[in-house]
Image (cartoon, rainbow, N blue to C red; front, side):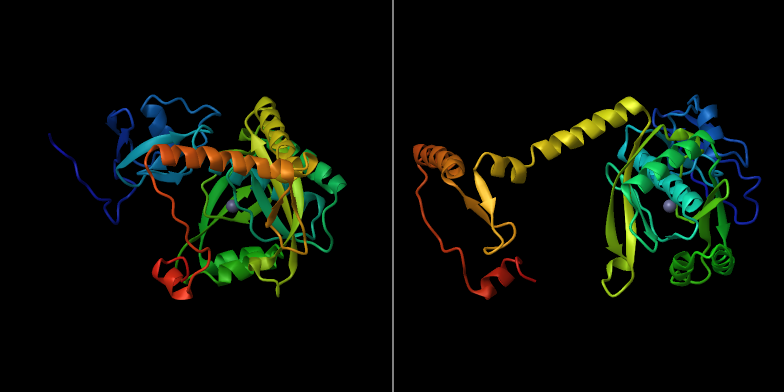
Length: 327
Ligand SMILES: [Zn+2]
């Protein structure tokens, strides 16, 4: 079998014709200057609103990025962790845009995607109230409805500093100043909103179907208590209202089944401040549970001809260093 192996010519990337391979093994040439979305379309993959981004040789990238190398392409949808990360990351940008439109003096800091949610930290002179959250959520929906194209640009460090200085985003300026010199810095724009970001992102704000802002919390800038306290807003987003509602119902159910809540209500366990956080006191009804489990466990081991030993719960520090439990 003939294996093609090529590298990008340094000076004529406009005329370079990348060869694309899809997951199904299909392989084809893509005209020079084509984007990932165009390459996928040539490969027979319809770029509907379900296609959020793509991986290029395993690395997530924007659908609008130009192909500059031979690549294995795979579309990213909401059904993959990487696809959901792009979705939540764009959602947090939309939320930040909503905050900036409603509270122009709020300073943006960082806003990452989490597993099932996202957050953004703002420097603002007071905590956001539940009424603020309702307004921000409403505005985020409106921004999604505007279907703003999300555009990536690469700037020099100096240009990026100037851009965010002009926008009076001093935390962004501080972040950029900490980046190595000489490396391009990417920013993403949607409408009037610009954020410093590695990406990738959804092609448009219109890809986010349903938003819910969940809660607020205080967080220190760069996680350091000597730094100013920031206002963090957590939210989540899903392609449809039905999926969002199912997720919120699941969160409620988790809360309802929280062992700390159920344990207290059923008089199984308690945690008392005088003893310490996370140190559980088992009440008679609760103590019956580990007792039953231990009895079954012991019986099974004895039945299988195991012998019992007991060892102390504490030991010399050296032992834990040897076992790597203590660094
Ligand atoms: Zn970002």
